[in-house]
Amino acid sequence: MRLLSPLSVLLLASVAAAFGQTAAKPEFEVASIKTNPPQQGFHFGSDAVVSGGPGTADPGMFRCSKCPLAVLITKAFNLQPYQFPGKGSLNDTTYEVMAKIPAGATPAQFSLMLQNLLQERFNLAWHFQEKQMKGYQLVVAKGGSKLKESTETASATPAGQHGAWQSESHSHGGAVVFGTMGSFRAANQSIADLVKVLSDQIGLPVDDATGLKGKYDIALRWAANGAPHNGANHSDGGFGGAGGHGGHDAGGAAPGGVAAGDPSGPTIFEAVQQQLGLRLASAEQTAAKLFIVDKVSQKPSEN
Picture 1 (cartoon, rainbow, N blue to C red):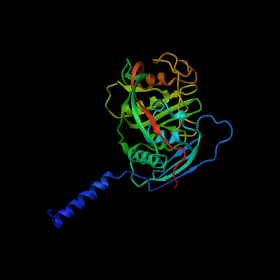
Picture 2: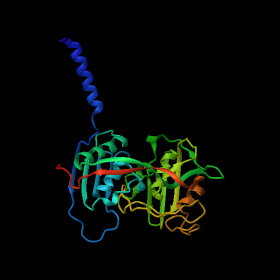
Picture 3: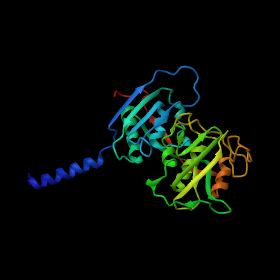
Picture 4: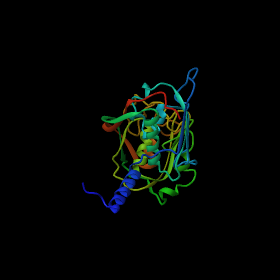
């Protein structure tokens, strides 16, 4: 048997160490999960309060209070409401979750940390399933796009805009809904970013068919009373479900019961066309990527 030289052994050890570092799973420095006692009485939607994480005012600490598993999963995988059809099968148990995030962690790394936490503590196993379903295509309206090219960089989003809103308890995907009005305002956004917000608010898939490739400063306001908003009362990862919405093009009645010309303001469909020069066109077939839970334990492992 041929013996390796000391230099060869050292090189192999270095390669193995480097491989181990790159293969290591992103993890929180410390994570605590406590199960809440069963809630008494009737509850509408989710009472979860989610805060912290990269891109918020508290990037080093993630908290989720009164947090159902469905909210944690939605947050970890950045799911839109329509992508998680099985969320209703999870029980109403809630948890108090606190996790310390390593300094400098990116949003993508944070998502992997939360996914790994769910896998290790709740024994979560999952897969994604492709499906064609009704939805919308975002296209350029007849009069042309009204979007303005951004002069900001991704790290220089002005305070009070998209980055700051992410830390608010009523925020989801950068959109804020207070009372009867909804708004989205952000700098340096791609059309893909806008599509995620629109899909989140409508509750159905939206495909980008604009052909626009730039980064834009986006400001959008719409009447949210009766609109199919998915957000829970106090959660940036919650959902209230938006089902049974018919097709709509700007100029007609929006799904959710907000009629065109409502004196409280434009529907989100009308706002997209009037304020951005884009249009949400009904599509019989849009590509949807659905999240399927294969198994999950409702009782987390010990801290």
